[in-house]
Image 1 (cartoon, helix red, strand yellow):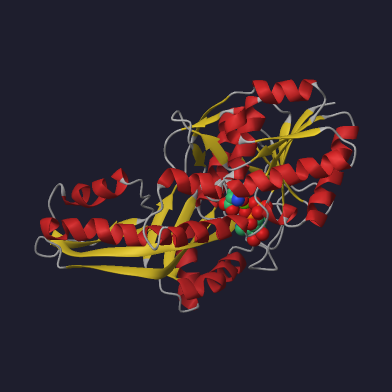
Image 2 (image 1 turned 90 degrees about the vertical axis):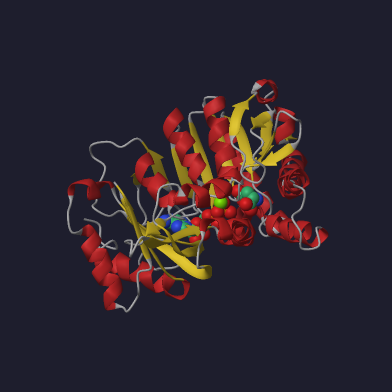
Length: 408
Ligand code: ADP
Ligand code: ASP
Ligand code: MG
């Protein structure tokens, strides 16, 4: 008998039939004698629909941030209540709880709030009554008592945070693939499923766009040492275990290839190469919580340089309006915007001790005529910005180049 957290993603609860089969799996775990807390996402497509409605209601402007979060959190309310109704109708005592009822306290950063604290008393009370607890993922509440959301894909983070808070034995993430693969299996059929992956490598993959796990959920799993299993809702495969690095874990030079299409490129052309210019460009962006990903600065020519960086595609309009205000002040000749780019990355802990990995990546892309627009590296990751239309090709080429389909 154990305390287990299970999370079901949007495709797993896409309709009543799927919710019924999710309920069967939960009942099986429960009748084996376990205490169980279930976190659900909104039914597939619902959050997108709510985002469209919010933007439509604001007539092309920016919806008030708190109302926006309140609205888009409602998909999870529907899914959690439906699952509790199904469980009840099958004769099992279940109750749904929203983020604000539990008091999943977050900061004020609407749209991508961070969890600060979880009050576990209400969950514990329900568990003591032997109830199955169903929690609406993705949502929290701030100190002003307004609803917040944790960023797209954030219900993975709700699940791991709750697992850590209630000291669950492990957290199972049920989704539409049966584990973490060497590349998105929907992009490359030769992708191989990993039995185990370390928190750090998973962080590298998630941070580079592998949306199978929300990046923050992996950070929390690592900090609180929560074993996470990524499994399919549609079969009984054991899935992939995300856990601490251990000595028998494969120390692959490259363990995965990922892509992120949510990238847009901004180039500030011909600014003076002197102290303070980069700060003038990036401070107003970070003040608005705009996340900058890759950055490059050209070699200076006669005291002038170009600065290129990437942001999320959804932020490009806001970046444009912020930079328009300071364009004169920084003395830029012009600012170019290109939303048609993506990023491909290779990730692996073994990279730390191997040379030639970057060269192999660049030459493999070159052989296919894929031009590299920007490069960034970290200890266990190399990323290249490329034209978006080459994304899938680049993933396949790199997967082949590093021999990932074969178990070494
Ligand atoms: P959910 O709605 O269950 O949260 P997501 O769509 O957020 O599911 O995440 C699952 C998807 O992640 C898969 O359908 C797959 O296309 C994608 N994915 C990207 N990279 C990987 C990878 N390396 N391994 C497995 N899945 C991946
Ligand atoms: N429903 C939310 C989204 O679509 C959260 C999640 O699925 O994890 O982003
Ligand atoms: Mg997800």
